[in-house]
Amino acid sequence: MKTYLTVTFHSEGELPSKIADTLYQLGFRPTHGNYDFVYDWNRNVNLQETIELVNRVQAALRGTNVLLKFETI
Image (cartoon, rainbow, N blue to C red; front, top):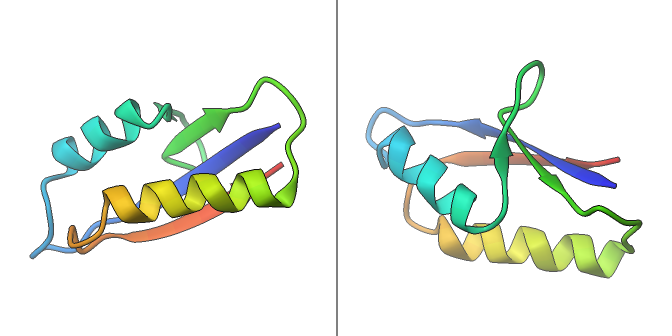
């Protein structure tokens, strides 16, 4: 399974390069197309695991003034 992430930046928020660095540290990689980043689980995951990942991302990016959209397939 993979979790895709779309990031919307705010002009008064954190630098995109710092957001990208934080996401890299969490295991996300940049991607092309409809999404900005992807997290490859390399296995099937349940809803609780997905929610825990989203919680970690939200906590790491708290205060950065970015909008996040997740999709796990």
